[in-house]
Amino acid sequence: MAEVVKVSSNQLDVSARKKTLLLGRQLGLGSEEGYRPSNASIIERAEHRALKLASQYQSNIETIYAIAISHSSSDVTGADLDPDWVHQFFKLAEQIHNRNMQELWGRILANEVSNPGNFSLRSLATLKQLTHKEAQMFEKILTMAVTINGDSKLKLINGYRHTGGIGQLFRKSESVNIAFSLFGLPYSSILTLMDAGLLHRSEFETGELNSKNPISFTLAGSKKLLTPKHGHLILSYYRLTSTGDELAQLVRPKADEEYAKALGALFTKDFKLD
Image (cartoon, rainbow, N blue to C red; front, side, top):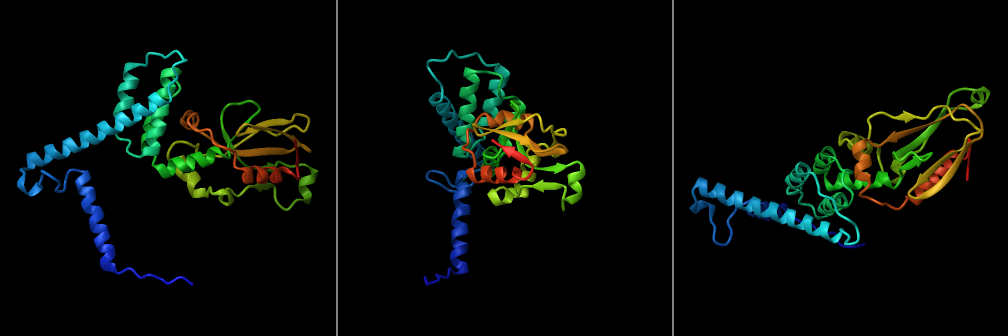
């Protein structure tokens, strides 16, 4: 068994103190080469902090702009963007510090220059509020989301239920659901994305399915055909908001194979899956 190394509370205090001091330098509140807050007036301290902030914002914009260039093609005709959209884009983008999030913003700009009108200012405002962790939750949703019958709106199927019929008399439960938590998506994540404006707050249902009309659905590029074995069946699902659908254009995730298998197993009893 490996030896357990004990860390004293003093060591932890020092580590936290060092991190706090470093944060102060990043914000322009701490001492650094050529500058001591104790020797500066409050106006000078405010000017120093504003300069540090402006420098960081400039660095963020330059990084995002460079990413946009790297994603822009010389073989595609570019478009003149709406000046108000451009102004708001960079006003929001300058406050994006996380490198992975900057990659998303750079790709948005490149996409708009090639094909304008795909990302609204509302979606940009939502994206700005997302943390990197929330963005990872959203990407996880996209590995499990499907399109149904050619509808481009992404949906997250969570089960189905029976609406009646003689067969229902011999069943223990009318609902059959899939446990998203088994695939790294706890219900708390779904609630978080609802709060973020990427998922609708309510569950949706299809109409009653007809056993003579198969349903086609696509999971991350893989097409399947779902045929009810009998009537009285309704699919239930979560649906991305319009903002969620816009931001989904930025991500091309691979399907969650384990989830795909579980989804297939979910349908086995009452559907034929081809």
